[in-house]
Length: 192
Image 1: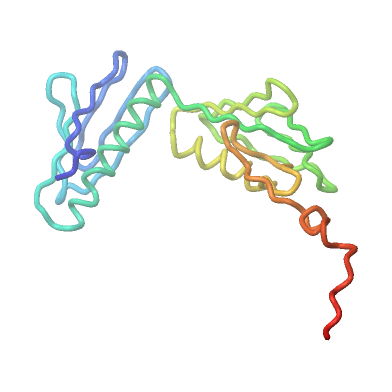
Image 2 (image 1 turned 90 degrees about the horizontal axis):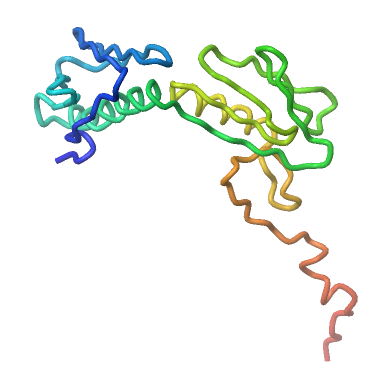
C-alpha cells in the first residue's frame, strides 16, 4: 500500500485543475504546468477540492507510478501557488556572481567568466556578490538549473572553496603536510 500515492492533495485557492485523457493541466497565479500520466495504469480525479490518484491494478509498474504521479501533481500544486526557492553561496577569494538581464555571470577562478542563460519561468537574483537566489514554479527546472550552476565549481574539501547550497555542510579534510607534521623530521629507526 503506497502511503504517498494514496495521499489526497488539497487544491490551493486560486489554482484550477483540469483532467483530460492522460494529462493533468494545472493553472495558478504563477503559470501553467502539465503532468502526464499513463491512463492504463492510474486514474486521477478531483473530489471536493482535492486531487485523488489511484491505481487500476496491482502490477509492479502501476505501483511504481502511483506515488510518483501523486508527488508530481503535488509539486505542481505547491509550485503554482507558493513557488520553490533554492539559495546558493559562493566561497573563494575573488569569486562572485551577478545577473545581467537573462544571463547569470559567474567569476569563479577560471580564466574566463562562466555565463548561464536563465530559463523561462525562473527568477534569479544576487542579493550580494556571493549569493544566488533562484525562484520558480517548476520544481524540476529550479532544481536542475541550481544543480548545473553548482556543478561548474563544486565545493572542495581542503579549502572549502566553490559553489554550494546555503544549508550544505562541507566536511573538511586535513592536508598532507598537516597530517604528518609530528613525524616529518624523525629519522627511521635503525635495524639491529
